[in-house]
Image 1 (cartoon, rainbow, N blue to C red):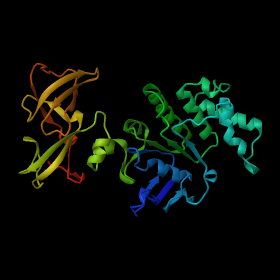
Image 2 (cartoon, rainbow, N blue to C red; image 1 turned 45 degrees about the horizontal axis):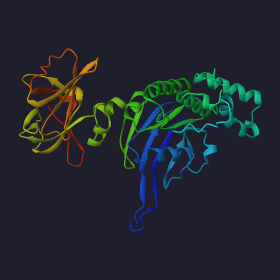
Image 3 (spheres, one colour; image 1 turned 180 degrees about the horizontal axis):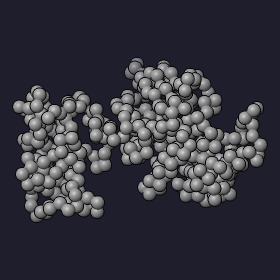
Image 4 (cartoon, helix red, strand yellow; image 1 turned 120 degrees about the vertical axis):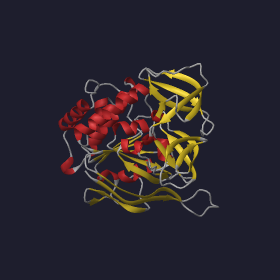
Length: 365
C-alpha cells in the first residue's frame, strides 16, 4: 500500500499564554512512501516523528494537509477504518490473557461480513504466531515471556488483522542490546515476507540504518533529509544530519577556507578549488583518517583502543569542538604509542564542510 503525505502539518496551542504562536510539532511534511517498503522516521526526542505516525494511523488529526493510502484520502477516516496495525514502545499486552488470546483479541471485534468464527480466528492467530516464531508459546501468559518474546506477541497482534500498513513506534526501546539486534532483524524479515508497507519510528540511528529502505531525518518538526541510509550517511545535507548519523559520531572541528584550501585550525588538509575564503565547520568521519607520518593533520595522541575488527585512535586537536576526536584505522596499523603526536592525512570523500547555519558546502577537487 502506497502512502502519500501532502503538506502534513500539526500545530498545538502554546501552553505559555504569553506566547501567541502555536507549537509546530510537524511542519509541511510531504513524502510518498512506496508500496511494500520499510521507512525509518529518525530524529531526537521531540522532533515530530511519533506525531507523524499518530496522524498516519488516525490517533491525531492534522491541522492541515492530506494523507492518502493508495488513492484513498484517509485524512478524516477513524483509526479503526484505516486498516492499520500499530506496535507501541510498551508492549500493551493483556496480562490475564494467553499469547493466543492476545493475538486473537483484535479479531473479536469484527462485525458483519468481516466477522470470523472461533476456528478461523485461532487459525489466523496460529499462522501469524508461526510468522513471528512464537507458535510454541501460545499457551503462556505475558509474565512468562522475555521482553523480546512479548514484543513479538505485540507484532503478531498487529499483523493478525492483515493490515494495509504497519506502524512501529520505538518498538525496541525496552529491550537490552542483544535483544534489540535480534528483534530488529526479525522485524525486517517479517516485513520482507509479508510485503506490508511499514513505518518504523526510532531515535536510534543504527536501528534505522540497518533495516530501512529509506530514512527520513527530522529535526524540530521539519524534514531535513530523505534518502537511502547509506546516501544520507555519505552525503549529509547539513551538520545536524551529519552529527546524528554514525557510530562513532563524526568528528567536528572549527575550520576555514583560505586561498582555496581547507584548514582545520592551522592545518591544511585539502585543496578546495573555486571556493571563497570563509569560516566553516569541518566534519571528518572516524574512518576518514589515514595514518600518515607526513600527514598535515597533527594531533596529540591520548589512547589506542584495539576493538578486534579495527583500532580506535583517541586523540586531541585544538580546533576540535569536543575534547577528543576518534579515528578508526586497520588493526595492523603501526602506531607508536609512546609518541605524543600522531599525524593523519584524510580521505576527501569522508570530509564535509558546513556554513555557520549548518548547511553543507560542496567541496571541490
